[in-house]
Image (cartoon, rainbow, N blue to C red; front, side, top):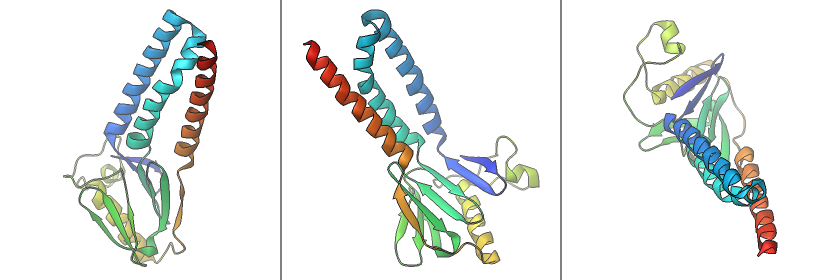
Length: 190
C-alpha cells in the first residue's frame, strides 16, 4: 500500500503491518493496565519488557519494512538494515515474493516488506493516479514508472548507501536494557 508523503515521494508499506501494530499496541495497553491493577505499578515495570519485546517483533517484522521512492532513488528499509539506491544504479526491478533491485555491480537489494505482485487496486485518499484520472496501478508498476522516469531524466547517480535501521535497532537496545534491569530488580526480590 502506498502513501503519498510529499511531491514525488511515495512510501510503500504493507497494510497488514499497520493493523498488526495497532492490535499489538491495544493488547499491550490492556495487559499492562491489568498488571497495574492486579500487582501494582512496580510489578508492571518488571513485566513490561517481555510484552514490549513481542511488540518490538511485530514492529520490526511487519511495520518497519517499507520502500520509499522519490526523484533521487529508492530506499529499501528492512527490519534491521536499510539501503539507499540512486536510480542510476538500478538495472532491473523484479518481484515474485518481494521486491528485488538488481544493481549495476551485480548485487541485489531485496525488500523484506513492501510491495508484492498483486493486481492493481484503486488508490485511497486521492493518490497520484486519482489526480491524473488514469487507471489504478499496482505498487510495483508505480515503482517501475518512477525508475523509468528518473532514468529518462538522467538524474540520481551516486553510491549505494547501506546501513542499520537505527530506530529499530535502538528500540531493541532499549527493550533489552529494560529487560536486564527488570531481571536485576526482580531477582533481588526473590
